[in-house]
Amino acid sequence: MVGALPVAVIMVMVDVGLGPLATLVIANPNKPRVEFRRDLAVILADPVAGARLRHADLWKGRPLYYTFSVDRLELVAASDIDEQDMEAARKDNPAFVPGPFAAPLWVWAPLPENEDERKRIVESAVFATGKDVVQMPRYFKPYEQAHSAIRSQLKPIDEVRGLTMAEKKLLTPQVAEIGPADKVGAILFDGPSKSAVAVLDRDTLDIKAVLKREP
Image (cartoon, rainbow, N blue to C red; front, top):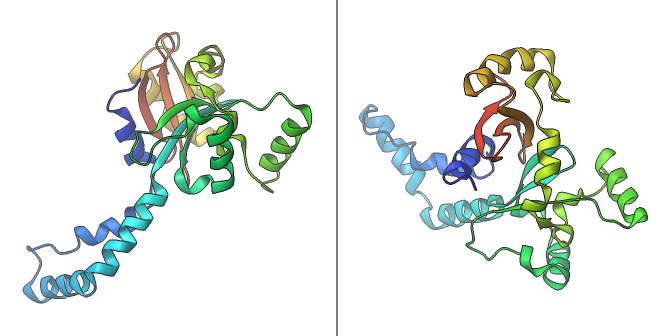
């Protein structure tokens, strides 16, 4: 739906696994010779272990889904979903189990229809005592089925719940540059460790920009 924008989203929002990648750029040949040799020694000291560590971190941190649920978009990484929930999805909802090297899926993560299960999930999410529905792919549905709900959650930046007054002040001129309020709307876009604001075209729902909440 958004072409190359998922790459930009990942760059802005995902810091899982980026730490190990820093070793690839530590050794700058423009540094003094002593520092340059030291950096190379650090990187090459145990290349096999380093490669395994980078691979493991990146694999666990790879994005599996971009979800819409309730009032926000959210990036869900492989590490956010345990094997039990993925196995339940393989059994009950296999269309939403991505392959090992597949691109992230855009999905709708509605609360289940069963009232007891809905209550349990909401309480666990509110009180941070368990998993949220975005971690349960057995409940996922096609993203297209959520278009009306997504449009209802697109707000002018000063009406987005969860933003501080300082964040709204920071983001208001940025959103205005992207388009008028009747053409674009803002919605929270959460990542594994950071929260941003996505600006979407109200008609097509294409993502026009992902803005950091802090300077």
